[in-house]
Length: 141
Image 1 (cartoon, helix red, strand yellow):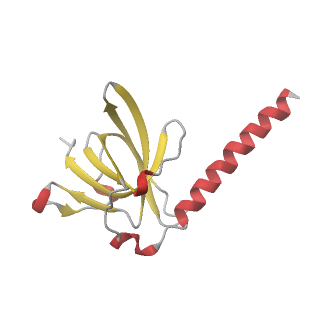
Image 2 (image 1 turned 135 degrees about the vertical axis):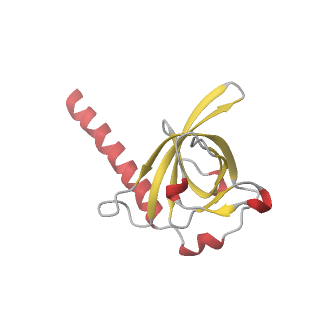
């Protein structure tokens, strides 16, 4: 009976993952023009890992994801950030910022990530889809 229960847990996790991924592919195409609002959450952290999506087998409309590490008042958190085709990426601060792309993201970069409405998948690590990514400081030597 415990084997059956364990299999149900695995199926539930797989189903949850599929539901989450299906939500990613259903993002509105006009999100690129969407302004940042007060309900959006902004995270800042250092990129620890970058994972591009395989163009052949990957999810349509998704460029990849990256893992950031942030220290939140002594509490350390890891968050997986999903980057879609609609995610805006910028390099630099203020008026000097220039548009970037997924390949611009590197391990060690300090980033500021805007998450739509602060929506996060409560798992470990946390997961969220970025509306905007600003590379504040490059970690590339």
